[in-house]
Length: 141
Image (tube, rainbow, N blue to C red):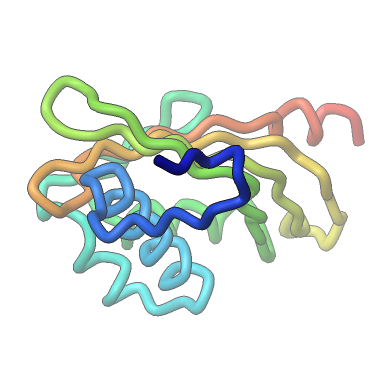
């Protein structure tokens, strides 16, 4: 009988649902980063709910992106971790990292912490909540 402590390699062949929902959210981030909003929107439910810091609410990716253009010249998110767990109504995927970019007046910002929580049901993102320290960063300028 072998054990992992003996330097043996163990290969898993089955993927779990947690891995699948993390892959879905990664594809969403890849698409939004590439500005392929059609692909990103196709990964979301037609009844998606999006809520960001400050209580701003949106019912479509297009509205969410349009709101961002009224606040930032550019915005980039670095994803540091993806974690998934079972949640009421599906799976929750938590993604956190740092963001950088510039305000409309060109003033840069960087190293701003953020965390997004996606709720995935039946292979679609149905809810996105996002929090960040961006307001605190703006106040410091």
